[in-house]
Amino acid sequence: MTFLLHNQNKHEPSIRFPEFEGEWETILIKDKFDFYSTNSFSRSKLDKNNGKVQNIHYGDIHTKFPCIVNVQKEKIPYINKSVPENKINKFEYCKDGDLIIADASEDYDDIGKAIELTNIQSNKIISGLHTLLLRDKTNNVSPFFNGYLFQNESVKKEIKIKANGISVLGISKKQLQQIRITIPLKEEQEKIAKFLSQIDKKISLMEKKNECLINFKKHYIQNLNISPRNFKVKYGWKLIKLNKVLKEHKLKSTGQEEVYSVSVTEGLINQVQHLGRSFSANNTDNYNVVKIGDIVYTKSPTGDFPLGIIKQSHIDNNVIVSPLYGVFKPITVELGYILENYFESPVNCYNYLHPIVQIGAKHTMNITNSIFLSKELYLPIDYEEQKSIANDLYLINKKINLMKEKINSIRSFKKYLLQNMFC
Picture 1 (tube, rainbow, N blue to C red):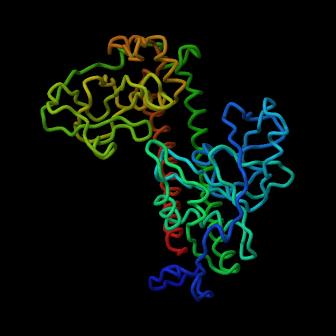
Picture 2: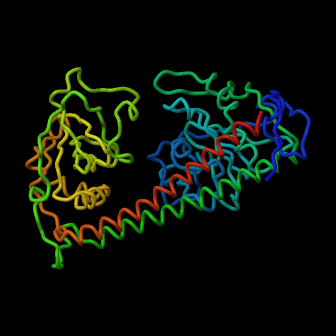
Picture 3: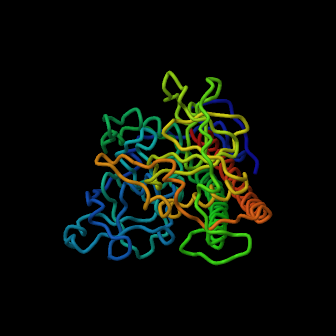
């Protein structure tokens, strides 16, 4: 694919296909799009599987849907039977090419996030709570171009400037109508949209491959039958309490170590790098030292892990973590790695912790280190077995991480194009 680089001109993109030239047209959104009424049905009025009319909720635009929504492939909720038909029928049904924009967000970067609908066929869809429904009224339009246009940083910046609010940001129909957008002729729109949609297909394909790898890993761990409820006698394995394979070394900070946090996705990570600043006390003398290979239990709710997360340190040098965290040395690094991968599952983690964690009146978690180590798991005690399993998991994780890197690289490339292929 050949691109032509242009000098910066606000009416011409900096990256362009070589067969096109000339300035783009600048137009107000109100002169390009008609606006249609949207409903205010809450989540409680929606049904995931059953109904006649589907509904696009602004929350799904923020968290679920891609830029171009293929209606036949995405799971769009239905309006449930509690809503009378006469209250539904007064709203405009969506058509192919319609834009639905989220007009409210708690996140500054997501205000005005837009999706374009395609392949609607006979589906009946209406635009829901905290959304704006736009339909192109000009002849100068190519499928998918408008959806990508609203991902461009220049358009998003204008939306952010006009948005207002404190805890929740919002943008009104009137404010959006006054925003200027710059567009090329239909032929160039088609070329840009086709190219970007090919990139999206590539990303989607790689995400599916990564999902297959993640599922393969999940089934691999399930087949190990580590949970006591799946106990089966195997050579070199033993039903054993964690206090027999994990030991609390109780090492405290020397004042030279960096402060680390524990993340669901990243494991142990520098606190400043992860959170933007250090939240440690001025005096860290009582902070726990974590050595490479140590297991850390956070004892605090995080996302899908309401009873805390369990991770192994892969940091080469010693670091320190909050004194509230439990830190344990496994009898072998390999067994620690197996435990980390086992506890990556929110279900496995919850099933192990739920019987032994006490929740206080103010939702505080009460669990001592000795109690944490008091339950049994069915684990490989034979070292050669540990090495074999740990090596399998390492190779699977390596493939997953490599695929993630490729996906992130393509996403970065797409972001670059969105910033430079539009005015």
